[in-house]
Amino acid sequence: MLSRTEVLGVWSDNEDRVKKCVTLAAALEKGRIVTRDIGGTDPERMAAPCAAQYIQQTFKDTCVQVKIVKDVQELEKEYPLMAAVNRAARVVERHQARLVFLEYSGAGTIDSTLFLVGKGITYDTGGADIKAGGVMAGMHRDKCGAAAVAGFFKILAELKPPGLRVVGGLPFVRNSVGAECYVADEIITSRAGKRVRVGNTDAEGRMVMADVLCRFKEMAADAVKPQLFTVATLTGHAIRAMGPNYSIILDNGPAHQLRTASEMQNAGDLYGDPFEISTIRRDDYEFHKGKSEYEDILQSNNAPSTMTARGHQTPAAFLILASGLDKHGKDSDKPLPYSHIDIAGSSGPFPGVPTGAPIIAFAARYIMPRLD
Image 1 (cartoon, rainbow, N blue to C red):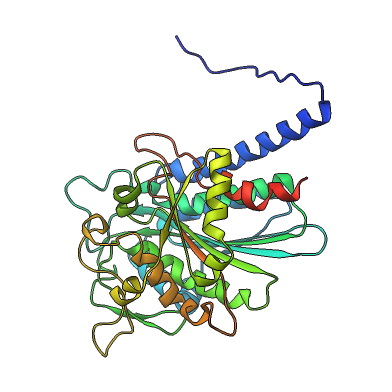
Image 2: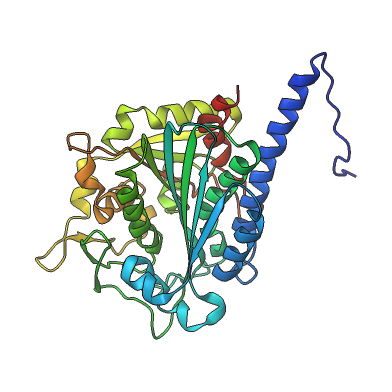
């Protein structure tokens, strides 16, 4: 009969090196614990208000600042796409949305800034385009993107890398179905002023992240060497395309020039948190181009991502268009590096326990080099 390990011993003739390794391993595992707690816990125990409370308690008396937005009017004004997804859930107090902001600033002069948006769908019914045929089970795991961002901040709080500033945005929303739910054919103006026609309410993840990404785009204008990321269990197509064990990363033009995807892949390979690199093409932007004079952007088509050509690439183009990042390409006056990460495959099996991906690769790329 197998039992859990109770004692782990380490032998070395370099005590300082052992201490550093143990400290690092403990910090990484604490980050994974936070990620698993949020991502794997059921949809009532980790509903949006509970997730916000958990995060607040996790970072109490630490170097990570926490701000929580819950006012419906503020969400409607500042984050209208997120607010639309929240409409059906907001009538039930325990399911009402929370937008959690996290911020870490390392000691010394800041030389790099990361902006991370994590998809936090606490439960995904599909909304009006309801998930049928028994495929709704496991949809409490649709918050693993936000869980990963929170887990990364736990590692930051433990290791305190100098010179690095990190800002996180975690939109926790339940995609409920009901009389108030948003529906296909609605046209909603995003924070960036883009008219978005809803094509499928089950494409809610991109909706809740787009306006937060827009907010970070605005903040990045005054930030030191900014890089923007979205992290999400976004598409079944990611699993169909690359298999069930890999995160997928896609760069915009400025991020490609920085080799963001390849460097993340190298870091992940070294620490057992593997990535596949995918590419955003002009076809993906054309896919989301408004089909009539009424809208600027089509949110989604009517088919599942697994049955849609380029089903994991097109959402990255949507996020760029809806947030206004298309005005910040490599040929603009203010290029902003942005990478989208789809963890639908790497986040872990259901039933099962979340893996914690991709926080180890993030830590290997952006934290560990600062600790030497």
